[in-house]
Length: 134
Image (cartoon, rainbow, N blue to C red; front, side):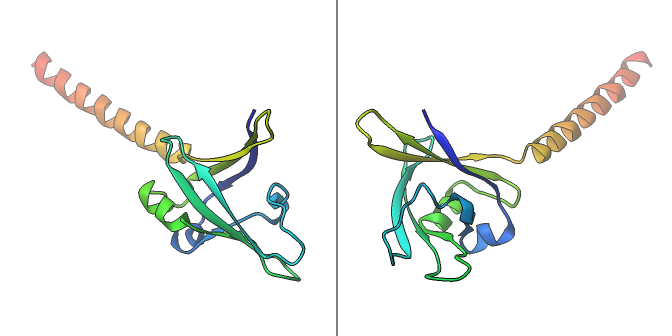
């Protein structure tokens, strides 16, 4: 069973530079004492494997970020501000760990687009009805 590690709504920096990673979600990526970065692979829903680097500052405010294939992932998936990414971790019965990444589009934008399309369709039908009545 997959466990959600992060569910994050993307900001401008996340799609232009690197993913600002939540500090409180570092737990599933144990770094050896003194280590400031770890590489991991995550599979997307199409089966493509992405190589990500999760890094943090050595002391003080950790400010973790995710790099590696991150910007390639952003471009390939056409991510925009307000899209939501979900990173999950799954451990099988042999204790093998796999990570998965997926995108949840901004539903408000989707609903707004759908609503606008519906209003346009409704207006078109109303306009067409007037021609049929005449």
